Amino acid sequence: MTDAPWLVPQAAYVHIPFCAHRCGYCDFAIVVGKDHLMVRYLDALEAELETLIQPRPVQTLFIGGGTPSHLPEAQLERLLRVLKRWFPLESDAEYSIEANPESLTADKIVLLAQHGVNRVSLGAQSFDPRSLAVLQRSHDPTTIATAVKCLSGSISQISIDLIFGVPGQTVAHWTDDLDRALNLGISHISTYGLTYEKGTSLWKQRRSGRLIPLTEDDELTLYQTAIERLTKASFTHYEISNFALEGRQSRHNQIYWANYAYYGIGLGAARYVGGVREVNTRDFDAYLAGRRSWQSEKLSPLDRARETMAVQLRRAEGIHRVFYRRQTGHDLDAVAPRLAALVDQGVLIDTSERVFLSANGKYVADAVIEKLL
Ligand code: SF4
Image 1 (cartoon, rainbow, N blue to C red):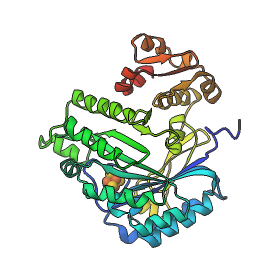
Image 2 (tube, rainbow, N blue to C red; image 1 turned 45 degrees about the horizontal axis):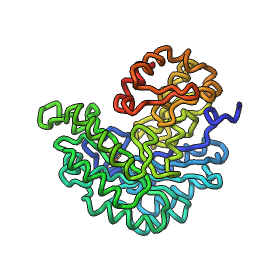
Image 3 (spheres, rainbow, N blue to C red; image 1 turned 180 degrees about the vertical axis):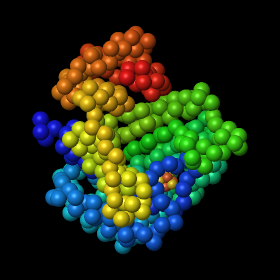
Image 4 (tube, helix red, strand yellow; image 1 turned 90 degrees about the vertical axis):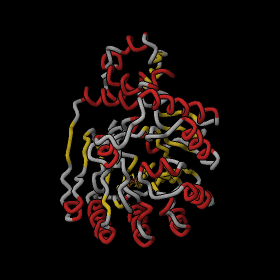
């Protein structure tokens, strides 16, 4: 039990906060206009990695942001070299990095491949110039195709992020986005509904009435369109927001959805080690100065069991009763007394071996999970 993957991490997340500008919907831990501090950030990151004491072999490593591909080659090379030392990859590991289409260059892609990166998650968001403008993205649709073409020579797995529910977006626009993504021959697509996080530019525009959000019904139609379109193209809908060709699911994200342990390094990074969930400081200057001040939350076994239920239900496979008991020490039915009622309502399916969202349940997944909790 001591080496159980929900206690001992076999995955690591590393955060690179630099972005060329802040997109209209983004409230992540990022910095803009601080590129001159990249070297100091990598110094601070290395200092944090030293706290691991010894190298930690992992099965999945994910460099996210921010925009990791915004690092110039010299810094990117340093990052990849340092991570190789602290997070050596097990054989057959998944090594992912997030990238924006406009900041990838052929030389950076060669560097990534040389260091074993085998998966790139590309922040495309849309192929529609009008949606890209609303979202305040800085690339144009042709840049996405160019980036994918450049990547496909040396990176075996390419994923694309798309956003639906953009004000003014119609089913026709969205269908076109999905088709253009499919035409690129990639193996993984993530589709996220636009959210208006407090303080973001889009949130302010909505509050002042300058921007009219889509209705919930319209958003639901777009989500249904994605499911229909992508499953018809042989993509498996393996998690609420994620679709992949056979064998191309994100192994790193599946660790989050299993509620397994992972290391987290960098500004604002979360980690989950030994049943303790922690989030690093989002204060850039403090991080550079080595003041990491983790916000920590030690969950009770019951809270951990509830949380495990909530994240595992996001997966198409749902919750395996026997395995859930082994992982959490709790019976699913004791943790979720309303489970049977939700099965009766048709939003959950219970095969006795496992419980998962029905087709209708996927459309209201958040509400179902909330009721269970
Ligand atoms: S590129 Fe990504 S991380 Fe950077 S501002 Fe835009 S949405 Fe946020």
